[in-house]
Amino acid sequence: MRHNPELSTARWRKSSYSNPNGGNCVEISEDFPGIVPVRDSKNPEGPALVVPTTSWATFVQMLKG
Image 1 (tube, one colour):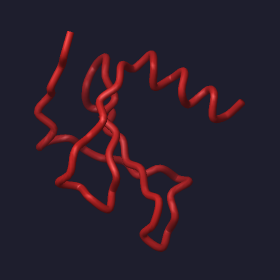
Image 2: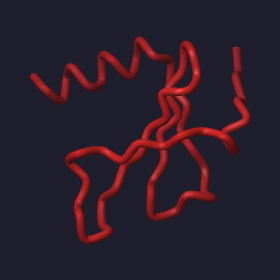
Image 3: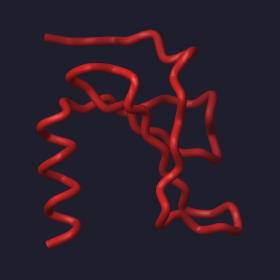
């Protein structure tokens, strides 16, 4: 099933691990039940990767581990 949410009203949160000098910045939105949109903050009008919440949680856990 393909899900293309309308992201124009999303509230984006930058990763606390992002580079403060403008490089390597990742943002996510937590406004959408069941999915997590992810984008490059240097290109806010560009595409966003949309992943299921469970997959995002697994990804974050793997990074922490």
